[in-house]
Length: 72
Image (cartoon, rainbow, N blue to C red; front, side):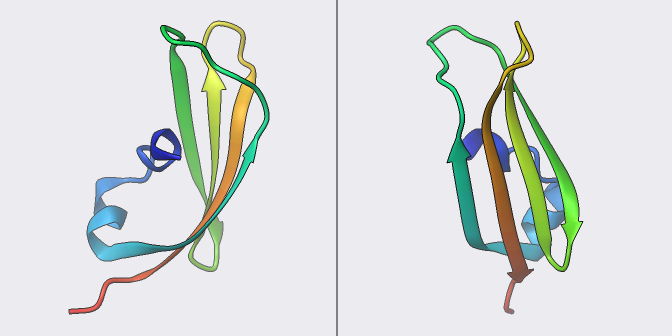
């Protein structure tokens, strides 16, 4: 989950807080594997995330996050 949320732009981290998280684990990863974290806006305060193993492009996890504005 940490790998997925690392792909959220810094501006959003400063302005928003995580409200909800849905995770689907799809494959395993072993120590030493390089992973790539992708994130894209999905509308209505949500983002879609994918964690992918670089060596073979296999998707390891798929996530949906929901964000709300930080208070004060």
